[in-house]
Length: 470
Image (tube, rainbow, N blue to C red; front, side, top):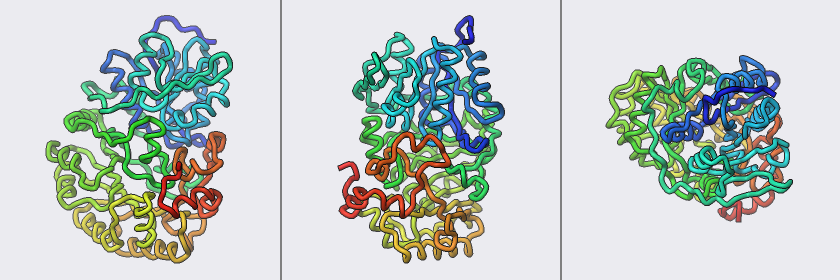
């Protein structure tokens, strides 16, 4: 046990990474953790977010940071399922170093698998805060007592699960009034990471498309209106995990202020992965208020092609852009069916709409990334051929469009790298896949016709267009 004198930090957060076959990847700090850190700081609680990037052994890294910051509490972010193993290792080693420091888990995956984590991890005094953590965590830090809301823990060898009574009706106002170096440990190192943009470890050398130097995920809002069959962050997942049932945006002036501060803090690329409404009124308002920035924008277009008005504003306010878009399949018929049954991303757009959009991006000098999905429910060989044909047409006509070009059977599923089956997704909720299946990132079940076929209940409900939880 290490003995530390003098408390410098209220809570020290660890952001895990994927550790697979001796390699470290996917160490991006989640938006939820950034939001939580900002909220705590504005309420007078000092915290730092430490990201693991593999320059040292994980255990040595944890010990170094605990010695450096000497925290009252340790928080481990388990938002993404591929971090299950490294998150638990961080917590276990922290307890070995000093069992007097309480450990708190939070994030989507921790919230969903709270019982399984408490049963598996064997970490004394481990508390899991489910859903939105802002107020429960402040209560914990203030009183030293486990809150009666949103928490799971072990007492007298029994798992206690308090109800989700703290549900955010509106997002708390947060803003970077300070350099982000006061929030993120080793900020310069974090910006220099050049890791692959995929959560599938086995594909790292085959997919390409690395994160940009100086890239930062911008926190814009919470929630989703879609219920995609493979996604653990859809509409129903938000309701199950946090109790929230509506989409929430931050105040536009706060996002504007953060962008301006982050450019000062050397951010070169902003990645926005939050696009719940096709009208995109929030982004039009933000771009109109924003002054020109010395940075690029990477925008994930959940709702399909972006309007000319928004593209023109992006062109004026940023030094280039890349739009990420996924029609999921080249089959227009299957795309329509998924949307009509509640498992796709509305509104529908045709393949011609997509090709015309890539042409608009090319005219402006913008890049694009287009990706498809293999293993879609009820996908036929004809549908797969349509995907292959569309991918080839995109590659032939638009040199500015990057298409993921690896798959298990390249002659059938070009540009469709397989996806993980995410915790709390409609597919996972109707299967036997559990927490232990996510402990080894390279072994996690991958979305495929075979995995979809294993979930007979899901096949039944998707054919009726009903939610897979009913």
